[in-house]
Amino acid sequence: MFCPATLVDDRDYRGEAIRTAVKGEVRQDSSTNEMEWGMHYVVADIARTITLFPGDVLLSGTPANSATSSPSRSKVLAR
Image 1 (cartoon, rainbow, N blue to C red):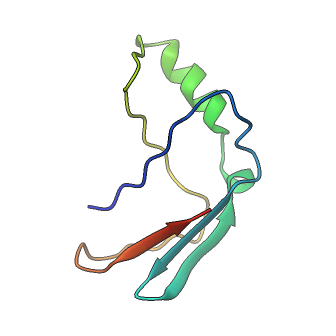
Image 2: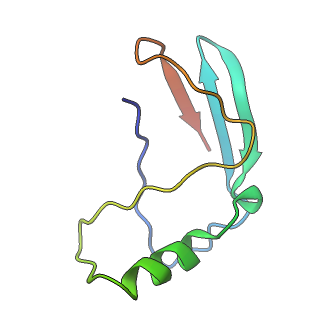
């Protein structure tokens, strides 16, 4: 399983580049602007239901054009 992670703080994450490559072939080249909901909205929505603690990990989807891949393929995430 491939799961890139980053610290979410009060920085503005709009317009951040999201690029995924499999064996050097770019499979996704997009931006956080293309996501259905911004990360600050996602965090606030989840926090309405459960208590979040430092170190909690929240996973979200990605913008369109991502592709499925087998676990044996290497992936690189670049900002």
